[in-house]
Image (cartoon, rainbow, N blue to C red; front, side, top):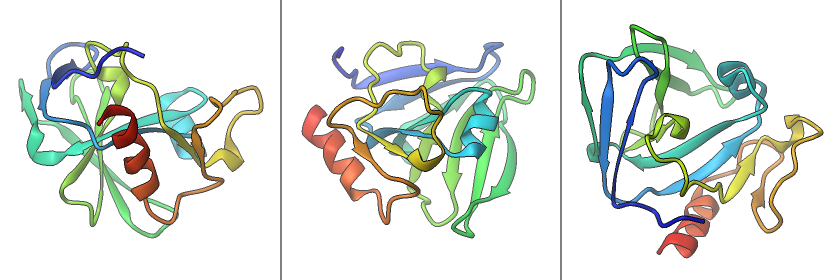
Length: 154
């Protein structure tokens, strides 16, 4: 695994919106729920949690769409209004935590999820790393995922 950078950058697919993150991520996990599969048009989505004040967006305004989650909470999904690339998610009630869609980072070589959620709906061919945390659905809280990230990345 590559060294985690202290400052990292990302952008949408067309390059109209760019962002910079200053600081240390809180965790990185993969989500195998059917909503993430649909949103990514892939087998799973990934979430890189950071503190919202650490994120600085340049190039314009984000388009925001909201959806209901199985928990009953609302998630704001932010994307580029030009190309539609999903950049961020933020769950209602988690005002200080922003979830970056890490495939939008300019350098993704250091990314390795410490856990997997909603494994009950993962595709059968997906192999999970030995030792990674696994939750059949949403974990009761995300403290374990954050502790695992902190242990690996100090």
